[in-house]
Image (tube, helix red, strand yellow):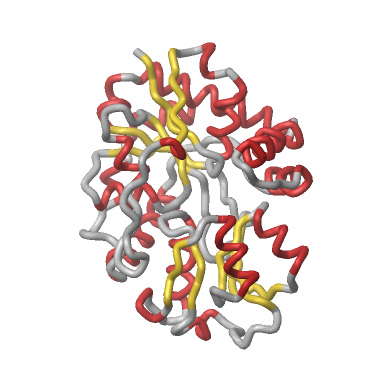
Length: 307
């Protein structure tokens, strides 16, 4: 069979694997650029979450396997999608943080009440902001969330259109060069923020050889990234330029050097963290129903990442 693998730059491992030609040596694969798929209707960031990743995992012509950040599989489970986790990376706590300008009168997370906060809504940034608010007794309704892309968020933050921003590297590095910032809360100590990979339950049960080939290829490619971070960064810079933007090779290399690579097993600690996020998302009106994240845990899948 032809396995359709979804990829985009925000999952660094799959993005590099798509360019390395490793997986093609093991299985018949078709790469699906998530940016080429029709987007789900953008929800109001005060009341819902985007469902793009899980929508296309369960749509004919979509993909069979995907890697994302922390929040999308929770969204899929809330849409009653029968997805299962395959593996997770190590913590990516150096990837980003919640910041304001140094001269802002916002001096704490508690001071975000009624303020506009920029996030890539539906990504790990939603979870980070929600965890941060919960840590000081605030809810989603206490702030004004603004959905931004990485580029739009940086521009809106610079111009003062938003009061605070969950920035991620390498985009955050460019803002750091232009502005003096104050960190309201770091990712480290708040949540582990791993990359994670998931698939449909039927694919995991019926195509174990193909799934094992994907995991093996990711491991091989991730080791190449660790050994050749600057060469890996060139893939991302070239992609940004090809899409009409500007990118710093040094900034991308620094970001890659600070990220963990490798796919490991789903742990109890990860599931507990996902459940806490799911509970908070539902309590704050961002999910249509409660979620049990352990419904997406399949012990048989763990043989792929522990062997």
